[in-house]
Length: 250
Image (cartoon, rainbow, N blue to C red; front, side):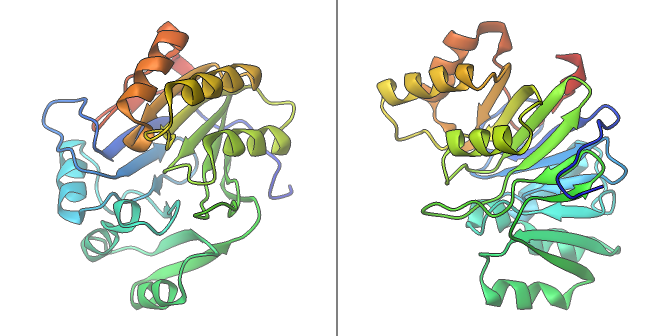
């Protein structure tokens, strides 16, 4: 099987462990993003938020053991996505496969080698686990990777901040998997500074690309959430810290 071929996985479950948007009682909010992905043969954490203490407390609230997952993927090297890393690594006692964009700094890559880590520099699309792959290190003002999950109902795209452009990320997925339906796009859309007109154009393009459900959070912006909610109606998911999303149940 090539690195870009997919086999539909078991049912995925996504838990947002860190976000600046509130959702479930008892979960702390802080600027940043982290999402636990269950359902592949290995659990995967995507990003670590900005504050490791907050991340670990939210993990405890969600009954997530820091040793539960074997794979960690980081979207990009901004503090609000990698800031919780060292608290997390200090709390673990197991080997970890770490996937980072090749554009991460040499200092970062050398520093994490102090831990029991197998580091993979991501350049091109690559499979992390059965039914889970990275878009590869996408170009933009800030380079970034996003994750793709293939469920039996379609592809789920999980983004950290979408600095290369949320539309570019979706279009990349469409090029990678032209026959696949895009079930859900979840995460940071990075439209918080965009105009209402630009956001409405983005919604139109989402529709053209066949995106069925949307769950904008983190750096998406309140106006973005309001416009997507109005346009997508029941297919808009209001998510935040503590949210649990089961794509096959949408």
